[in-house]
Image (tube, rainbow over all chains, first blue to last red; front, top):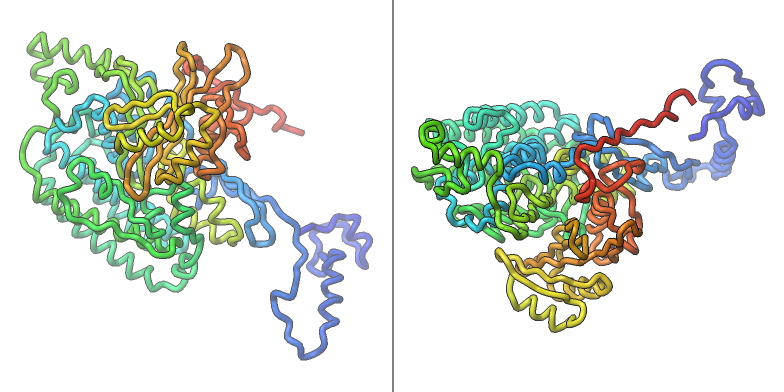
Length: 444
Length: 163
């Protein structure tokens, strides 16, 4: 809306020289016309809202980069016509940390801490994805001990739960359900306490190694995890009962930002976002890796591909992850957790300090890195937001020649502009929340 | 993920497919840049309807220097295919060019922008080829092998202050 300038106000009936104009004084020429037109309607004839064309001009609004609802840091340049989004430019990159460039100068093992910081609400899934890529290039994916594979599934599914809890909780809070946010974040906290006990870190675990995992499960891990899952399930039921029949929540989620399955595929969506459109593509089911073919679990899909479907799919996926966890805890057998190959696994500390072979092996691996044969692979796993792919190229040295990550957040976020086109400003909040852009993964 | 897909592709485009190979279970076809659009269109019709990923590799010191790498997946059969396109860089010459495939897969839009941002490979026919992760004022292409990792380019705009 154009503000009256001093000149236009001076031309009107009353002069405004100092201070803010009163509403009567904010009268543009066009609204004069409108008022006159309204008076022409014969008496008794109802005037529909749609008949009134309010004079508006396109307005450019910056949403972000620093905005309470833009978790992560993203800037959306909106062109608004009144409350309607006419044009959108989504600008990402505010959290760019040169992951791919840094990886080229680190040894293969030193890349793990960088992968933690990709999707920082499910770091262990990134750890597992990268380890699988290197093992595929080494040709040892079948030699990773079974117990290590089970542990990877367990920590991976735990991470998926924390990922979805964060997404759902944050989205609820943005729609006003702050209590639900606290319930879900509390549940996430219980899980992180467990992971802290296992890996030594709350968030940046770096727990997975090429050829296995860093350490075996802690004592009583299984019993504690089952107890935690029970409490998480209760928190989830509370959250669901507070939201599923909540009028405010449903009004802002149902039918908002709908996308068809064909469009979702053309735009490269994966993960819960793609499944919300009814496409049952899940890497764990379609290309089973690790020991996922031994578990009985369902792939929840939506029907219309709106925000509510994306919410419901994630909610159900948490329950399916719990099913996988319970089966994995039953099936897991004692055994080694790291590959038995001195060229890949670090020797135990006892050997490093007491034998010359152990010391040399340790030294060579720390300084030169694991020698990965020349070649290239694309390895993929199901991350928190979809297919997490690593395309790695080796030139035979101890460091990656090229390490590219197919970041699902980056590809999913691209569709935001299409989804909010023609929607209201308020619809951006749940839509963005349900795409679940994770800045660290999107911007790398 | 079979040899059959590669053989069919070679039979269809004898001249466009420069070479094929399979390693670690990944099938790869190297396609000349000029025929990329036709190959991709045919592959999309032949079932590879999903563009998973698009990136590039800088093989400094080799000829051609750049490779643009596409990963495709078939949503019906689950097979995967890697397509590589060589991009020549003339010493101190203009940016190498590869045809854009945004018209075939809209997802390529941001992915091609990222490759332009990081490698300086131009995608001809791209509707909006801007930098995406870095800022417009950035000089150089950081993922090229001749870009030093330690180089710092802070964005300081002095014209912001006191106009």
